[in-house]
Length: 314
Image (cartoon, rainbow, N blue to C red; front, side, top):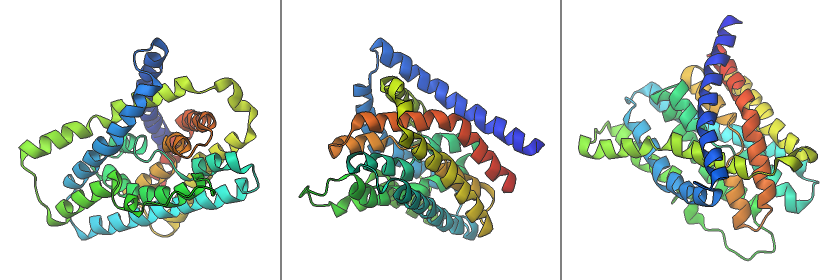
């Protein structure tokens, strides 16, 4: 029990640190220094430049062995598993809801901030090994969000053809495509190349959290508590999915940093992609912002507990 509480305190401290940085973004939004509109441009910077740099650096930081290769494959399977769990519960809870809004809640249940929240937290709690496994989980996240996620959000009357290139040509997959060969071949980049990659990767935590703070500031908190479906999305995304993930993965033999990394990613709050996808497919962006903000705030309490559970079982 003492170990569990110690793990909760450690994880909670790291989560609070991240949210204190987010408060800077909230303050800047209120003062007009850095608004939600500006943060949307920052999202592109994080998505297309910083995220691949993090992934590449994480692969460079790992020594190749049979264990790490096995861990990579397990992380991939773990990422697929908890996304599928989210899909199942989303379908059960929201399949009979109003279609125009149900898509928001379904997406919110399935897809979490495995990049902007999980990677900084993994860096703080687990180090390079944790980032390595969490980076691998970005692959199923990107593939599923650009297939299943698009299918949820896209209006059926639209004639827009699905772009299959997005399954391969996206930052998460490209980052792994560059980093994986370097890891397998144990290639060391010269300092003149490695240093810029590392510097860019270091931008993730402060930029992601400041950006997230603007979303918190822009959310309409007065009307959040009037929609029970928002609570349902939170229940699935940050409680049910991570609990099922930790129980199942432990049962099939996951352990150590790998188990904690998978559970950490599974317990990440609703992805900010929810808002971006809602905007792209002409859905209710205000509702998407509410869900994302509410689940993210609640995750301050739930993520430390889920991480501590996984750490206690490792």
